[in-house]
Length: 92
Image 1 (tube, helix red, strand yellow):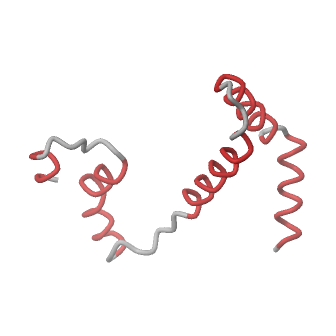
Image 2 (cartoon, one colour):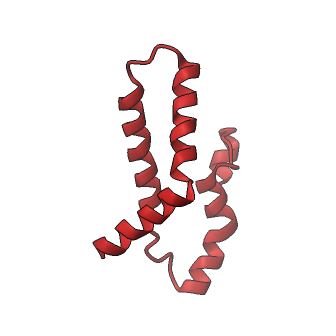
């Protein structure tokens, strides 16, 4: 962290913050850093790539942003959430 500050790099991004403010406590509490999965991050990256592929032919960035907003809204509808839960239950 001293080196990051000396290079005038941000220390407020998630990883430097986690290291500086939480690492020692977690090492003591869990007797190590454990196995923290980042599956949700990978899934988010994959969704972003998929969205970019769907929208690559749209020239109007406002239209593309509006389209993504509509997709996100539809994903949060109760009927869609119920279907997702049902599919997750079936796949177990």
